[in-house]
Image 1 (cartoon, rainbow, N blue to C red):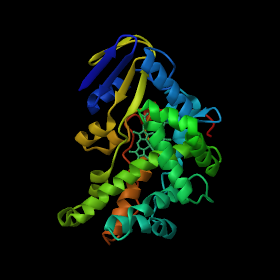
Image 2: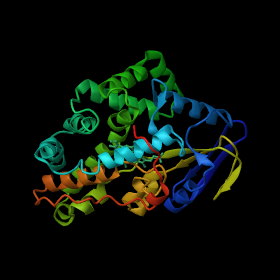
Image 3: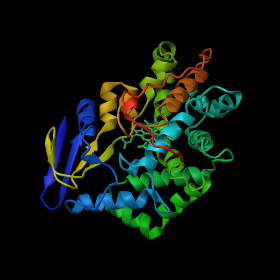
Image 4: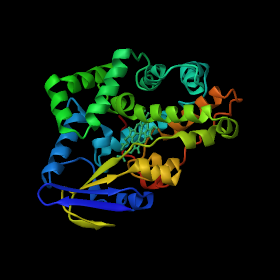
Length: 319
Ligand code: HEM
């Protein structure tokens, strides 16, 4: 379903919460990222803020970049390939997920989750990466301030300099790589929420005994609440007429919940597919296995293949 909110000169936003409509809209090349200050006032403010916040030394996070951005696509393909076997249950990985499995079992507090997960994700990008309470706090504050829709909080975090300081700290820990900062500072929070759900499932004796690793990962996976697109020219999508600068919010959290399909949660059929999908899914499966003392499944690639893989020619030259 789509809801269109338009107040002339002030705002023009369409909300879409159905995965089929999201897929249909997303096939329309007039909807893209690389947000420009266009359209009514609030659209311009939001677009400008996102591009300002989600950039490191002038280089934007992958989630800000356009569908045809060759470097983004090369980075996406390279990370996807690099993470293909990153969740193979080696002794190091089993040790790294121990605190996470303990949390799922209810024998470790919530405070262990962020730092343990941040270390695990950070090491995918920098082998010497170690989380710390300060770095985890930076990730939590940065995510909160960046996502906030409260203009007072925007002003506050700018005036106090916390947003800049947190982003700087995160960036420094991974060699100023915006893809890595997205991982340890933003995307990580979806895994934290997924583990909170997994803990609930574990606490329920019926779910604990009936869910196998794949079913547990599917049941617990939490999608990003929403992802944003901007209209680059005049057009029609189901439920709305677009003008340049119109914003379209895919309410992925709701859509994925209804579809009960990891491909929706990871935008797997889209040009913007998450390159960490297989890794995250296998990681969640592995944590469930470890928490419930089940035998380890052989490491196989259970990542859903992107349906549009053939349409994703990767330009020469990786990151
Ligand atoms: C539960 C965990 C996660 C979920 C549900 C998830 C989901 C998503 C979704 C829906 C997108 C598409 C955004 C859009 O359409 O604009 C995306 C993009 C992306 N994700 Fe994830 N993600 C997760 C974890 C991660 C992690 C841990 C990393 C890094 C290690 C990561 C790296 C990326 C990157 C780099 C992109 C941008 C792809 C591009 O457009 O080039 N994600 N993710």
